[in-house]
Length: 74
Image 1 (cartoon, rainbow, N blue to C red):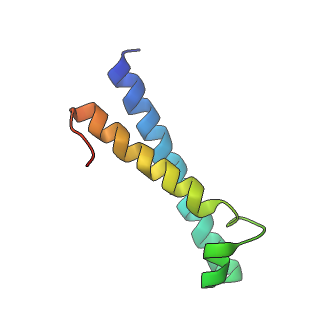
Image 2 (spheres, rainbow, N blue to C red):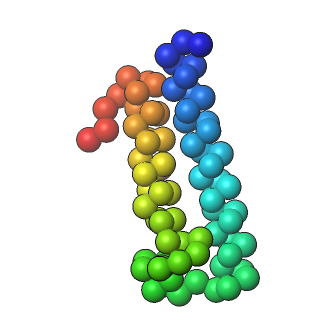
């Protein structure tokens, strides 16, 4: 596998995980409701590390996209 193929594969895997997380969040929200406090300061359940984990993956996807096309993130 080339470096480019590996980067594309990593990016696609992250995107798929992010979509899965979005679906889980929507299902959770419909079943339980989500307050601002739940979203920003959850102490248990699905939302404990949701924002940080999602943001880390989203930032990695952006970095991979830049790496693939040879641009830089400012």
